[in-house]
Length: 114
Length: 111
Image (cartoon, rainbow over all chains, first blue to last red; front, top):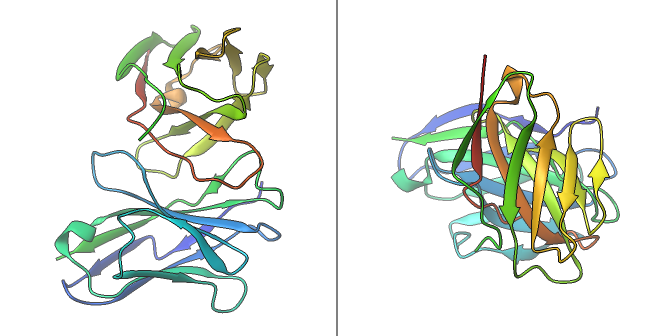
């Protein structure tokens, strides 16, 4: 079964540092997403990305966040200056060519800001 | 905000059918009902989706009422590995739109 791969699985960073979370989407998928889940809370949408640009973003996705596909394969989420409240699980998800059916989620990156 | 309402928790005996209800009274004509589940803190996993007809796959069955205002996910023979949080989500099909997760139902399958 195809899968979305996320690295690292766990990252610890100091407050104020920049972090980059990486995702390798399923090949030929065209719709990409980042979600986050603070411990004990629901999964929250951050941003969607299609055709090399952001198609939608939530109010959580402020100027501290950015996304890109630097090499046409990896899909990255950058947090420029991390805050304690950025500590969460971050999930990448992808959907196929037609934007239909199921979204495939990665296993997540656990970000801990200290 | 999520357009669905689910009970926060349910229990089910191993080997019995688990019936998870969902209310989506404001669903639009072009919105499908999707079900996902999340085991511990793993990434959400797709289970099934439907528009108005009942659907069945190898994991579960989805029963949608005729007025489409509610649905039920059925796991026919629940196992301990089905213990998870189950999310009912309404979403427009075929447009790559985001999934909006609610709180879901925490299903505990007990031996």
